Amino acid sequence: MTRHGAEVRVARYPDGAVTPEDFEIVEVPVGHPGPGQVLVRNTWTSVDPGLRLRLRADAPAGYFAAFPLGKAMDGVMAVGEVVESRADGFAPGDLVSHAQGWREYAVVDPAAVQLGGVGTLTRLDAGVAEPQVFLGPLGGMGLTAYAGLHVVDALRGGETVWVSAAAGAVGSLAVQIAKLCGNRVIASAGSDEKVAWLRDELGVEAFNYRDGLDDRLRAVAPDGIDVYFDSVGSDHLEAALDHLNRRGRVAMCGSIAEYDSGPKGPRNLFLAVSKDLTLRGFRGSSNLHLMAEMQGRISAWLRSGELVHRETVFTGLDSAPRALAAMIAGDTTGKTLVSIG
Image (cartoon, rainbow, N blue to C red; front, side, top):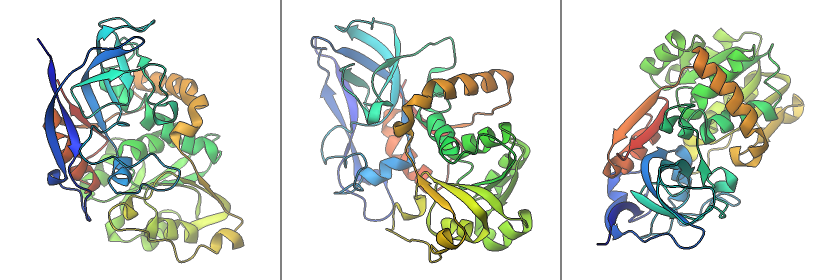
């Protein structure tokens, strides 16, 4: 008897905000693995801001390709259980991560490099953490947060670091890593509830950017900031350029403010010249050499309780489009996930 499973497909590219109507859920037959392949039953799948960049006819140059219309969405992280294996090193029952999420079953080739290596099929140690944690602190989100601080030399401590989108999956980790490494951390988010969580649970100074950026930064950091971890771009990057000290650094992780509406560059970019600033774009997948180091440090912080991991979980594969829309709208906190079951 043929096994069937559901998968999410892009029905149309969003014009502005993402809506669930931009997707369709389709039942498809599930094939058996060929030589060197495994069949995985996905149990958790990731929801990330970067998916929005692929929901257009042309993804940004150098980024991952746009999702084709009417086809399965390859390049989305998931964890699951191996059901069948014809590949050395993988056996039924193994917990694995890979990059064929937003579907119930996936035939995966361990030799295929996915998402720059982050999404290549990998066996996971179920004794280290709950499976979904490998989609957050111990996976690509943790690597992005750690690598961003690393590339601007902010892991040494002793500086003032501002993190935007600080209640999100990457931002909340960057906040805590920067703090645990001995920096003074300022965090910003888009609601009073998120600000309260950052203050009360993560123990950092925080403000609601909707109350203003320039005045709030001047109030909390009258002597300026040394490092800015940027997930927003636009007016946030503009404010950072104003408040960065001489020879300050920016780790450019994303540009959420532009994902739905197009480019909104800062008007004061010349300050990068006049202040001798470093603006460093980076991708987690370009820093795979840091994965083991990151996982070792974050695992220890998770075990000791020094690092807090918060999740916003949607249930059922059919909730994935709604989860993405909610996350882009700023209605989720921490790592946004879909529990497939």
